[in-house]
Image (cartoon, rainbow, N blue to C red; front, side, top):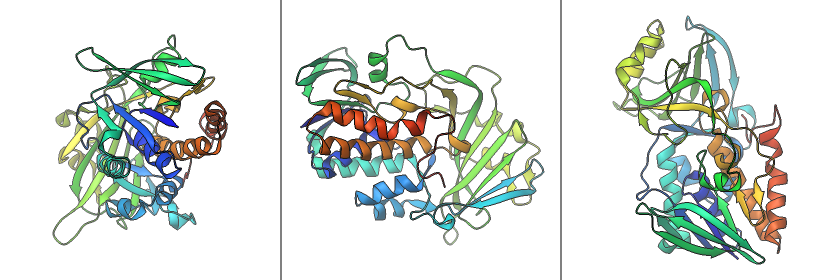
Length: 364
């Protein structure tokens, strides 16, 4: 079986690795950017996603670049503790909740793909631009930056190309663009003092503003901890577009929104101002689709079910994509008919993303 994957983000790479682990080694991954670099900030991998990475044999590698998050502590606008709850292993889950730099995780998965499937399994600078199905396959078209096209023929096409998915647009050409959520998120990484236990996610909120922080790196000797933070505020102007995930934030304008949140245990304005890197992210959403699949073509991850981050933590989309990838690979390995396999994948994964209060994989 030949499988073509559009997108070499976390979902696409997890798909390639999961297919290989399931015995499907003829996999081609196409990525729109010319060079894959470790961009972004921190995310949290929820326990079910950690379990799936462990089943791929990658747990030790991921653990080396991550920090377990064992508790969530909520504070009010005065910095007073309101409530706390255990997370991951501390909540009785079989696997921990891990915070990790998104770019470092992507590069870890990329190295694994190149090692397992070979350098020829990845082609960059090519964006999905079309597909045509036959009785026994699908012809896939990609376009480079100069407008030249490249074609491939596969048994299955998987579009794991994010919220601004070309595959989704081809499948649903009349769909409305993503809807803005009326809020803006700034996300950054700052060397800072350890928060609480060093394995704590803190949330401060006052009904309009939100600040979430958790460690990406533990303090060691004189080296400070590395803190990932997310600052949310009602949007007061135009937001970044749906594909603009790495728009640099203007750091000098953000701290003023949180000027009164200087607490004995966390100086929020200073953490923001001292960031090594920070980005502005759009809070946008898509309506659920009637189906993720079209014959031998299917969507995966944010291409299928993008939504607002759960609790503002970032990473629930990556966790869902990893679980999607593992389920899809198992279904393809278990069925001789790819169309039946895609139907089984959608049946198993779609309900969790379309129910009004649907479960989140590994929610603790």
